[in-house]
Image 1 (tube, rainbow over the protein chains, first blue to last red):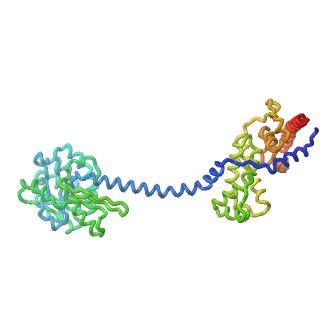
Image 2 (cartoon, rainbow over the protein chains, first blue to last red; image 1 turned 180 degrees about the horizontal axis):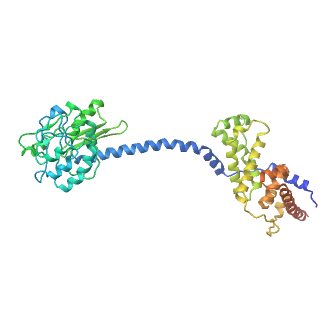
Image 3 (tube, chains in turn cyan, yellow; image 1 turned 90 degrees about the vertical axis):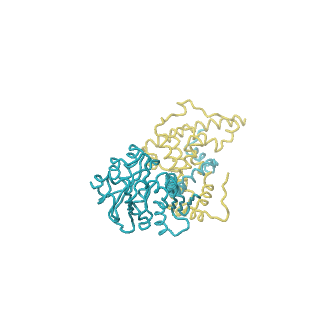
Length: 271
Length: 191
């Protein structure tokens, strides 16, 4: 049986040409994946972006809801608050001069220590239980909220000033900055409120020339409109919906956020 | 194992729809040619699994290059060429380092089943080819079954023309031995 090369080639060709073998199902599945993989991956990216921004918004919202122990006191509007006493709560007694310096050292010019002129003056309310607490609390507050140059006047007058001068002249953005401070010592009732009064009449100052001793207790009860009320008004001017983008409510401990409305995401705390 | 194409769709229509990227059409086209093309790939492979890898790579190329098919020559021939190239590429990737070992040297013997060898069908021949060392297998396939010249094989496989010729010669010798053995068995069985 001496087979020629051609014969053998012919044999193989004839037999194998019509030969078919069914592939397993996974082959098409793999091909289909390979061909369609690109499209599927592309569609995931925008979804991830949306998910990421939702996470950011929710965590910001939760942060504000939790932060109600921080009191940022401030007049709701200028005229209304003239004469309102802003509380200085200090269980341990008088405010330490040293700590005042620390807090207020970024406050711009204050000419008279006690009677601060409405359009110029700035002041800070410092309420602290211990100097140590304050040190931690004020550091971020002053550096972040106030961008006005430091003047010496405040420091020199500090010993006189603290109990009776409470002024807040804050323009809205700064106020919200102050409120947004996410710093650690939330429980420490220390605030440094200051700002430039370039906004003029809108922002008011409150000074209490009289009756220094009574001030702390009075102030606490009368804190009907704090930063929250002020912000509510500002927001109401912009956001006409029933549920504002963010709503504040005064509580005993201070202002708290009781509602967030981001369109698709709505959180409202019933009081 | 025929993959019948639905009567209302012609191959031209299928090709047009595949060019548009229609997944359903791609699947129909795949089903129409997969069986035949797997048989082609198997000749270049050691086993079916390897052949399926070649088939998969080949079909992905078919769909990616579909726009290049201008309707000149048979579509099946075009697909088949892609499969052959895909198989060779696979071989070069996976078997380049393999030593060329003769079946005789490795002591290989085709297991002879008297009943099966009596028929000497495609399956048997496929088994013989798959047992060749990859280099012999590739050259024999390209020359004897696909009709490429030694010059073309040298280009495709990245070897010299002389190597192609000598490998073809060796492959034929081995195959002839095996086939005659099988036919001899058939003869004895028939008697």
